[in-house]
Length: 336
Image 1 (tube, rainbow, N blue to C red):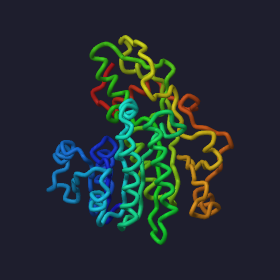
Image 2: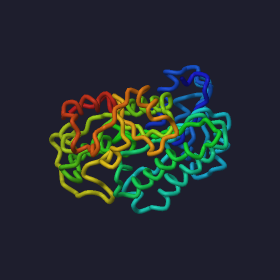
Image 3: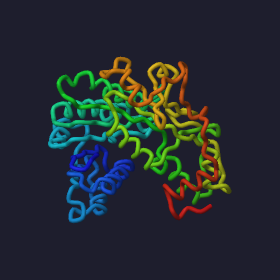
């Protein structure tokens, strides 16, 4: 699918961007060009050590901010596919720096859409978050707005055959700033701070996130918001898996946090279809023939009122399964 194509990843030096880079080079060795677009030159320098130009001649490192439309437009010259992973994502930081979050997550999305429409980009996949479903924090609200912008972009493309889609998933295991690396570090002190003992989260591996992006790049008709079927975990089980002998003081929920996360709300259910491995929330007025979409994807409409909530999930990680996943996906040297 990507052999002979040029791809740009915004936020390409982040956890998922690096996982996507590894996957693309391993799976599509004849990729024409892979552009890593991010504003952190130190991370680009470090990633450049992992992907030296003599071994990976297709890779390019492009320092730029998603807030700069002219810069992103220049970076998109000759690009076929775009994966949009750049974002301000830390919930408490976004609460205290709201305009900075809006500039990156909302205005940055608008810049990227405009730049893609004015170049030769064929497909765009934007990354979303469970916090964008019925958001109570600024980060979630900006990502919901971003989702809406990318989905609506299919309506303003005119003659352009470009297709925009969105992928939404839960906590990526081991990603920067997530709870598992935080707990692994804190257990050295013998204390694992718990915000709320009832808290649950959806859980997906980096590879699971990569697979979902690849699915959207290959199969999106334009306008879908894809949601994976993934397990949840309880925060107390994560604490038990990592530090069974650690103290667990209750410190209270941080600004903007929920006890449970949602990826599909009851209001979304009227436009949500079960595709087997994934759900797809479709636009209320799709640009494609809905009957053809249902037939070709063997899609089934979910029950009206259905919601996909981390606290009501049917599939759960256990303490033992979490320990195994941590060893496989986060720290191969992990032991209890």
